Length: 341
Ligand SMILES: Nc1ncnc2c1ncn2[C@@H]1O[C@H](COP(=O)(O)OP(=O)(O)OP(=O)(O)O)[C@@H](O)[C@H]1O
Image (cartoon, rainbow, N blue to C red):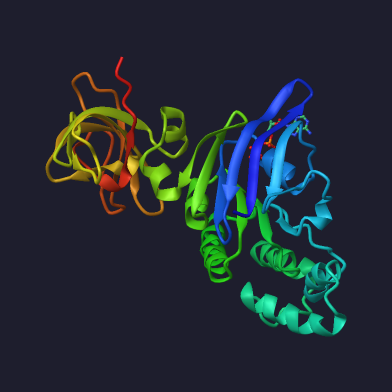
């Protein structure tokens, strides 16, 4: 085990921004701290780096308590939302700064900078002024600078949130490949579930300063512990059902789910968990929103049911008032614990 955090609490006056947080990151693993704005993600990350004093708790690396180890001696690399590059230096000097801080001999700088630029997909950019970089390129340079001293833990605080959507998606894919290829141990802070799921092996979902759920990405996505976590992970509709032999029967249709136990179950549906289909439950379209890859719909299924979110292909020509049929898609369905009163 590399990083181990226990009972970590950070108070700002009477307000607890982080409450008794516990998490572990194993060697080569990427953990994402995911949560809404103000949930305490950045405070927890800053406390781990040593930038924020702990009110209580411990941060250990391989068992060693870091309480008395200052930020620059922890061997951690940091990347923030705005890469905070030195504007008067060129790309190579920005990256070499990371090397100088860690006593890498000067003769090795050029070669190391070249290798790092290659790693982040910016070969040949050594002499470029940082003021002449795009937002995405600047974040790649910030990443190269943080990686230069070969940190034992890379901490990324919303590294992509300053970028526009398309670029952000591409950079998340590139960054995920880089982290896996280089077997870097990392902690990522983000409010964007797509980003967390692209980049991380495990996620810890924070809300109100508390870690509400922690686990492998797929598991948290498929089995959120409560409605709060489920909603934060994109679930908009909850429906009860009865499982038998791997199929769950609900008022919105049947769906086959892996590992579902027979008996009463509660499902959480993301919009793409309900798709317009040839057969299935009938409903009336009440709203249509065009998205890049699909059309989002609000449907009134009739009867006692409240409106539900659903999707249709971009080619679907649907308007409010149209009648459609809906089928459940297991890809967009989560399973929640069902509390029997
Ligand atoms: N220096 C400070 N003094 C007082 N309160 C603070 C301070 N820094 C943060 N807070 C409060 O602590 C809470 C957690 O803040 P934090 O920045 O960790 O949240 P976050 O999840 O990272 O949010 P965001 O995604 O918006 O950055 C917030 O309610 C914030 O207002």
